[in-house]
Image 1 (tube, one colour):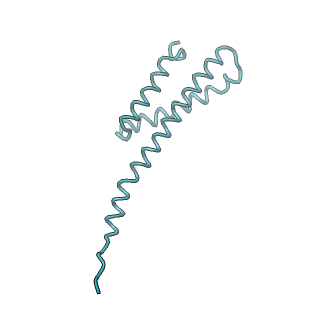
Image 2 (cartoon, rainbow, N blue to C red; image 1 turned 90 degrees about the horizontal axis):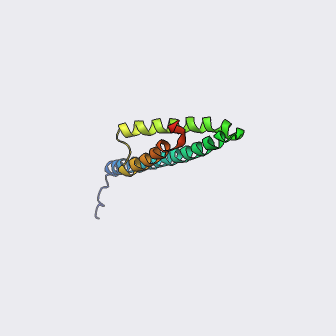
Image 3 (tube, rainbow, N blue to C red; image 1 turned 135 degrees about the vertical axis):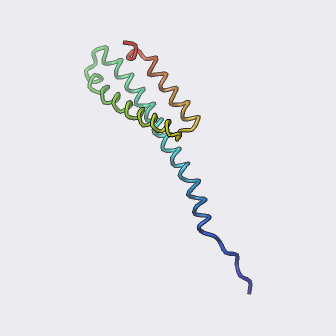
Length: 107
C-alpha cells in the first residue's frame, strides 16, 4: 500500500494569506479613490449651484466638502505609508488637479 504525499497545509495557508490581503487592500483603496472622486465632483457641482443662489445646494455642499476632505486625508496617510499603487496615485492626482482648477479654490 502506497502512502500519499503529505500536504503541508501551513505553507498553503501562508501563501493564500500573503496573496489575498494585497488584493483586498487594493480593492479597498480603489473604492476610497472612487468615493473621493465622486464626493469631490459632487461637492464642486453643489458649490457652483450654491453660488447661483440654490439654497438646497448651499446646505449640501459643506457635508460633501467635509467628506471629500476626510477621504483626502485617508488617501494621504495611505500614500505616506506606501500602500497605494502607482495607478492609484495617478488617479488621486487627477482628482486633486480638478480641485485645484476649480473656481472655489481660486477665491
